[in-house]
Image (cartoon, rainbow, N blue to C red; front, side):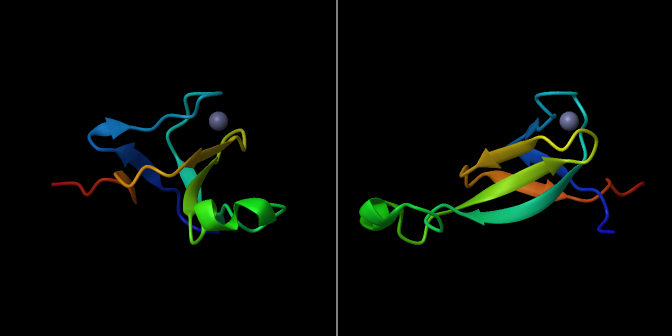
Length: 76
Ligand SMILES: [Zn+2]
């Protein structure tokens, strides 16, 4: 199983909207993949980052380019 990821938008950590958990699995989601034929021009090549809560499974979807994910913070 993949290791849990933490996520942040800029300096703001992302917490699950449902349960406040802070670890996720990451999955890229293509927004033009299903039933969006009429909008092909607007959505061409658009993809979003899906963050799946490891606790409750809620999927957070973001197209924010500042979103980043990282593994457990290194200890120093
Ligand atoms: Zn959750």
